[in-house]
Image (tube, rainbow, N blue to C red; front, side, top):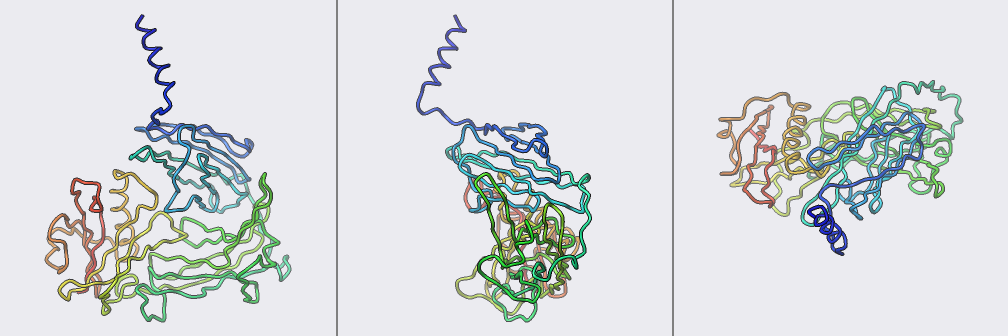
Amino acid sequence: MPFMVVLCLILSACDKDDVLLSETMVWSYEILTPDNVKFLGSTDAEGTPKYSFEANGKQGDVIMTCENFFSLNPISGDSYTYDCGWAMLRVDANQVKIYFPQYVSDAQSAYEEIRISANDGEKTVYTIICLSRNFKDEGHTDPEPETLPEEAKFKMIMNDFTPLMHLDSPLPAPLDLITFRITDVNGEYSPIDFPEFTHYYDSIVWSADNFPHTFRVYENRVTAEGVEKHISTQWSSHFFKSGTIKSHLKGYRDGKAQYETSHNMTIYERDFLGLQWGIIVMQKPENLTAYCLLDRDYEYKVYDIVATNDAPYSQIIPMNHKLLSDADFLPATEKAIKTLMKNNVGGGEDGKGKENLFKCLPEKGVEAEWYWENETTRMLMLHRLSDGTNGPAQEKYYLHIEPK
């Protein structure tokens, strides 16, 4: 009798029109290229599923379908695509379409985790897609550039830069927005249509020494729906540290690099990163979102220099561009600040007791964690404490900056 009662209750619940959505995302998947892509397994840690796929260096396609949510959120910001160079994801309604282009890398392997989310009422639920590639058996020999005709060659130039706070600066600095162009070998730029050199390649990829990610400038892809082509003849990026950066543009065909050009660019430090003391924004300060196409692990909101009682200051706050949960975002903000500072100033020291060196700190709700300084500037990593609500004063780490 108890068994019958339970069964009737289950059937009754299933007949309701307004079935509550599960807090865990349920997925099915189809690997369209089983020779090149393997499913490594799935786990479920505290309601967040993880699905892992591994591909070799050849082209691969996977379609994942969410069975209990019919509309998925953008992957980052308002973008429904994610491109790490060796893999591309696209959210389409309740599906995630994963594409592995034929790709050759100097590294033996690559790994990336992408967070997919959906709204369940007032809650947000997540799935983590883990992608890896194994290139060790995909050896290649690049042809000499001289084997290509002149019309197949291209080059990369730095076209312009927009200084932080629109400063009148002759040289680029960290956090400035730097714009690049791809031109033909003679420097001729074509803003529309596909330049002739693209006919020789399946893709053209931008990379740089000591940067973790790449950016696909051009792609010619054959799908079941036909040929898809896209090109960014001009693109822009911020950079988070000073120094000389050696960039590369590589043209690939059939997974092999056919042609490469390089470009050296030097980024110069101002007083601190791209900030220059002496200019204060009195009205309508802007908050710049700084991103780097070649290091998508971090994004930062950079505040214009403003003043309190004639004392200038600025702030740099990590952005939640990966849509992390509150619990995951808090340690991510600490890591983002410490990484930024380690790459530019050094390790720093304990910030306790350094508060008296600053004039514009909040009166309450923050704790000093870590301190740095250079010849002109003092920086303090603050831990903003939770106010017990889900409002804008959420708990996080950020950087407070003042001149000496």
